[in-house]
Length: 175
Ligand SMILES: O=P(O)(O)OC[C@H]1O[C@H](OP(=O)(O)OP(=O)(O)O)[C@H](O)[C@@H]1O
Image 1 (spheres, rainbow, N blue to C red):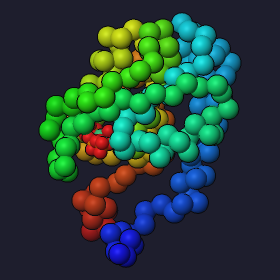
Image 2: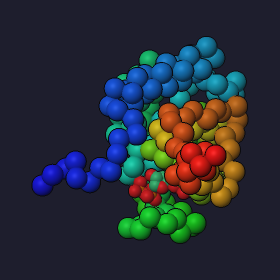
Image 3: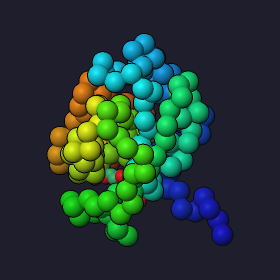
């Protein structure tokens, strides 16, 4: 089987992604080093929560670049099923194992698209008593956003790469 036959074009090389992941890890290390967190309400090292399944590889690369004793957990949230269009109704199909109460949580995503998954997760983490929520996503498709993606408790939004939609690219080429 020719693996490359499934790749239409390469947007970012392995080297570019690796360099960007290192930058994100350094930024997070810096932001969470001084007071133990970006929020003043908790002194514990941040808890990194990957949204499975998509985030697992990015998370593995990212945590090796964060020079802090982070704890790691996963939550499985699905909204696409086997399709490519979001149902708009994310659901937890595998819950967190670690208690997030009074913790500063960094949610790690492979991609933020409509924003529905993060909005759902933000409400969930708030209901579980997390002190703050930051987001670190490898890819961000802000042109596809349907709901506002917010952080809370002094958290930050970290983004690896912004994905420009083809229609916008065509618009700029045309003019
Ligand atoms: O911003 P949104 O429109 O909510 O989309 C983003 C979410 O969609 C994908 O997950 P998916 O539901 O496909 O599950 P998977 O990671 O298991 O493939 C992706 O990994 C994000 O979690």
